[in-house]
Image (cartoon, rainbow, N blue to C red; front, side, top):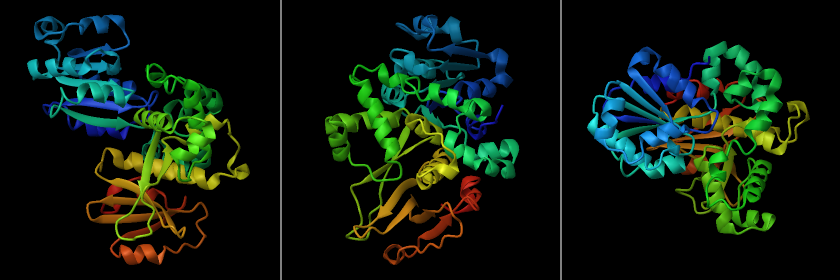
Amino acid sequence: MIKRNLQTLIESYLFQKKAIILFGARQTGKTTLIQDLIKPYKDQCLFLNGDETDTSEIFSKVNSTKLTPIISKYKIVVIDEAQRIPNIGIVLKIIYDNFPNIQLIATGSSSFELANKMNEPMTGRKLDFHLHPLSFGELVNHHGLIEEKRLLHHRLIYGCYPDIVQNISHEKRFLASLASSYLYKDLLMLESIKKPILLEKILKALAIQLGNEVSYNELSQLLSADKNTIEKYIDLLEKTFIIFKINGYSKNIRNEIKRSRKIYFYDNGIRNAILGNYQSIDSRTDLGALWENYFISERVKVLANTIPETKHYFWRTTQQQEIDLIEEKGDDLLGIELKWNPKKKVNFPKTFTNAYPNAICKVVSPVNMEELLLDPNLRAL
């Protein structure tokens, strides 16, 4: 088993009078992480699966009197796939308020369902964590820096979902299954998703446009679909942890691009599976986009739970000057330019360096990627 960094972080918050909520896409290993987390409390833990009918029955018309004989003797109560439980926010609030000595843990694969149902009832009572596909740092911890960097070509094509990493000879079959409707099963169950074929077309269009700015108007024309519907579907895809958006950075310069966005996939393998393109690195025409998506998604992973207040942007002017990634935390600013070829010379635009003289500017290639992917505190953000 590959140890997840998030497990250590969550362990530090156990029994601190807060419910722990673990979000993440399907098949990222949420259940495995929680099962490993509770091993020391095996006889003191109640593990409930929200997919099971009897679990739903337990929490139907729930009250503290009904729950007392079921959960009161346990030190930890886990509700896996919590989004399946009707009125989950009220259920968690009742447990939290009436059984203060119980550590409550809930997992969910769809943040839009779980968060919407629990935010108001659980305000001030919970801590949220996000589990992504395996990170570069976790894989380095598992089998070493040299070996993981040797596998970079493989990661760019097949990604870092646990099943893919641990079944190297079956990547295409596993990815085909993962990138099918299973990955966005939660979306397809929503009544508001009336056009699943459109959802797949949007994903394919986003995969093709990887690394480029995304216009909802252009997508609307390309797919012959309503712009508002496309925007809603993209928002839902983001809330199921398949994609994420970064916006243009604009503070000081009149001609900075403001109202624009780029959309990346949390995992390269999912993106390539959507296109059915598993060609080797040597044959790719999209190598720059693959490297950009890989590094930016990895950087998002490494900061998401450790320095969550960090904001991510890209920077571009109307004169086509650009920087791939901007990170902002308070008054600190970092500009990152990504190059696959470490020998390629890079000059950061003077428009940017003059406007933001205190910003740190860094060129990142596969040669030095570990400086920003292993320990976020290597640079004072």
